[in-house]
Image (cartoon, rainbow, N blue to C red; front, top):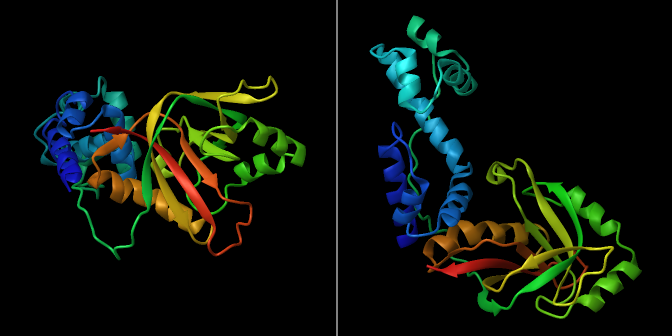
Length: 290
């Protein structure tokens, strides 16, 4: 609960400074977490990026001020952070569908994006099984491709990576695996900013965790020593897994004494039988103590 309260305190700061320069480091300080964690948590809970939320709020307030007819368009543009009337007009048109001058000419309907407040909703009460693991540095070795972000169902681009692996490729990868999570894993990192709007791409690895050297024909990702929260998902694939992944950010982080650390999000599956009603997976998330 304190985590959500801290996030709301940061939102109060942003709201009070929409007509000023917003210091995201100060917002993160009020949220009692790193700037990285604050931006990521905001995106997961709000469904849009922090920068997009600020843009929408500023343009909402700008529309209100133009409706009063007191300030000139350029004055409103400067007040809400735009260096030119042209840049302001393009942004305003993009959000509201009309030009700023049209607001002053006649009273059209406009879009209003209200300020956000985060609240914790208790639903069902199903337990989340997790453990905390300390790991030394290691590397992920395997195949990497830049793939589209997809929330539900099987990602066809990721499926293509798996299909490209022969049984010999898989055996060679498994021989490299020597640290947890053992066996074949998947890892996602370097997400586009629009992740929570299901926009953009991410770097997706199919491979193994290892301390061995990476063969020349494979790609590697160096992972520094870190603390990991490991969440278990047992049930129909991929729905159960995707549900757990969402709950990590919407339920666990707001109430935990940890914050998100920089690093890949790792997925380990127990076997290949995705048709099993008790299919078991683990999600590994890098964390820091608050």
